[in-house]
Image 1: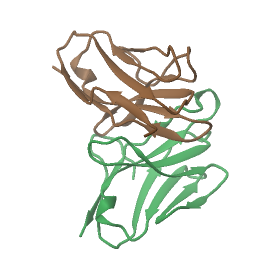
Image 2 (image 1 turned 90 degrees about the horizontal axis):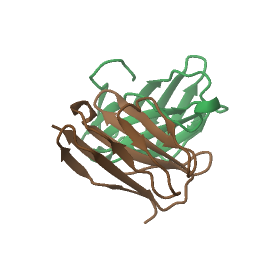
Image 3 (image 1 turned 180 degrees about the horizontal axis):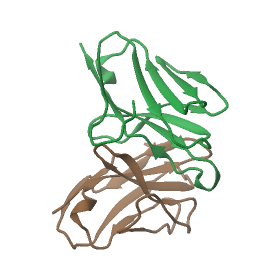
Length: 111
Length: 114
């Protein structure tokens, strides 16, 4: 089934540890996005990539980094996790002008 | 509709009623708007979209209205069903250099009672 695969689905992480959230799409979409979702704040953009080899900062990029080595994969890395990064993380891709597709999310708890 | 704060707006309706969910957007340059439905434990699911050159668009049981004068968007769901219970988000696509980077509203919790 075409779409976006995120892994892991959930994770409990000790503060200070490094963590990479994986995102893979099989739709050959050029643009990909990482959002975090916190209750009462909606989804906020962390980082984005308009095409393979390029990345950009969104609304809340601090503490996160991304890479886009190829079209399909867009991993999000927390270099040193802090409790305020406890959230649900969604990866999304966009095909053409419209047509956003979201993954099922990764629920991350930093303790 | 939208509000600032930690508590999501809520809407409770009876099965069969029509539901109206409101959203105020912020960027007058936004040219594309989307409504998403999000069920517990799942990612946002596309419902309907509208471009800024339109003021109304209809889908199956859903209608989106856009009022650019007051920067307001609404989602109407006809004959609401228990399966419609979810959190609904509006999203705007800013123009210019921010094109493609959706900005989401806070969300509204819709509860449909049988």
